Image (cartoon, rainbow, N blue to C red):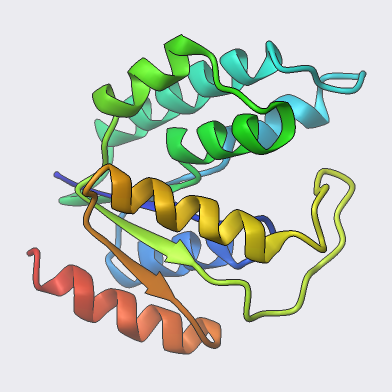
Length: 169
C-alpha cells in the first residue's frame, strides 16, 4: 500500500486533487477530518482541539487503508496539523510531534498557492498562503520527505502527480 499525503496551505486544491487522483487510480481518499470536527464543534476551536483532530485524522487513515486498493490518497495528514499549530499558536503538542514519525506517507504532494483563494467559513488565512507554503516546504525538507510541488490547474496537477506516483508503482 502506497500512502500519498496531500498537504499545503488552505484553499490550494488539496481536496480536489485527492478526489480526482482517487478516481484516476480507482481507489479511496481520506477526507480532511478537521472539516467534520470543526463543523460540528459549536464553538471556536482552541489548541487542544488539534489533538482531537489529529486523532480523528489518524483513525480515518487507518480505517480507509484497510479498504483501499494499492494506493491511498490522504487529504491533509498530520503534517498539516503541525504547521497549523505552529502558525496559529507558535508551538505544537509533543503528541502531535511524535505522530509525525509514526504516520509518514510514502510521498507527499505539496499544493502551491497559484490558484484563486475560495472563501469558506472554516478558512482563516487568505493572505498568508505564501508564508504557510514556505512552512510546509521547510518541514518536508527538514524531515527528508519525498515530495513534489503541485502547481497549475487541476488537470496539470493531476498529470504531474500521476507521473510522479507511477514511478513508485
